[in-house]
Image (tube, rainbow, N blue to C red; front, side):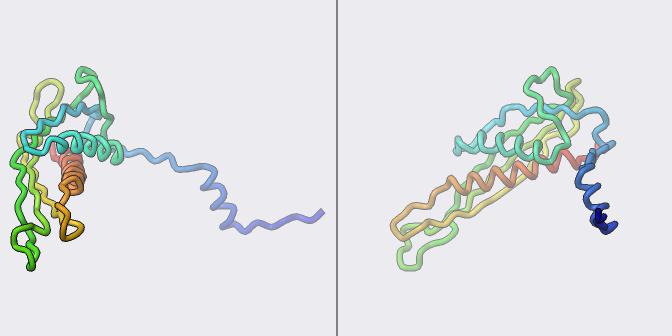
Length: 171
């Protein structure tokens, strides 16, 4: 019977693959406060879909980044996140040179006011204003620019900003 020689580097790689990675973040900035309740996004703008888009994106970012556990019951949470949308504006950004009546694109702006409190009532972040903007172009000369893509882009960017704000805030 013949023995097969396995190179040491290959055997080390095989052991690492079998053992897996059991890394866990031990970030002391958060202490024991890891459960977060995300309050309903108050949408005070003329874009009714934006509130639900942003709420979904905030949850996705928090889950993806893994620093907090989202709680569905406010009494089980350590932190409470409140977001309010204001100052939604849509401005014409680009005109078609052959047709000055119809805009070829527009720019949308929105502000989010973010607050984070402990479940006991202590305010950690009070009314921090985040601003985001996005641009939209129309597909053809006879179409109207759709703001859905702009709203999705705004909510994605604001969700990331809010997630980073609560993770990186120095308490």
